Image (cartoon, rainbow, N blue to C red):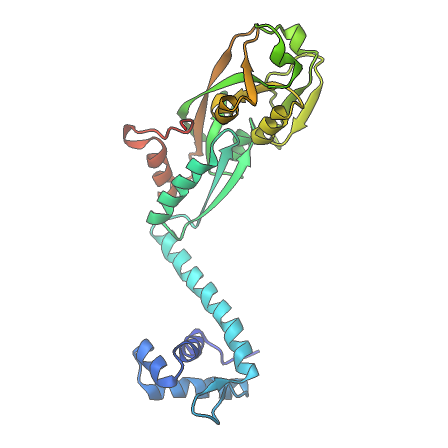
Length: 304
């Protein structure tokens, strides 16, 4: 099948409609008016249709012309994207970077990071996903992510990734203000805690063995998708368990969640990490590594 449609003719058609006349389109495209007229005539002849109704003072598109313009603009957008994509890759910028975010990381600061990146490289697509516990490592090792922010310690064996400390997060034992454990004397024993339901965020790993945190043998469990839903469930008194202090600071201040000391202590601090595929060496990855931990600076993910 042979069509007389080409990108140049679509550019001409688009310019005529946007600018309102053949002459204005010629001015925008830096061409003589006769070349604009010729391009339209050739397109009409090749397709065997009339694109413009020329009976009035102003050239209006026919229904066929409107259909061609609509589809043509989609083609122009795709062609422009393809051109920018090829040029971007040729200069070392990735077409897309996939970043897995641990559910312990505040997304407001993730968006700050994305905003800063898009000022430098607006054409590289970022694909963000949220992972829970070992799901961050699973996303990296399986190839679902190129970069991970907020991976817990003890990365999987086998290598193929780089790692850098992100910072420490404090996990505290939290109960709703109206939960029975809120009135119990401290420190809470494990035997006492075992009598009440724990809320657990499900590890999002698909291939690596899932991890559990703070679950006592024989304890009833309510499993939820992530830490924020876990916080909401515990705030409602549906269960108890460990939560990041930074995530519940406002709830503590409002008196809705109470931090309790257990026989294991007031809380524990865990180091989280950035991790990235060492096979990925593009400029976008380099930018993120510099932003996250380059030049001796670190992003403080857990400050208010």
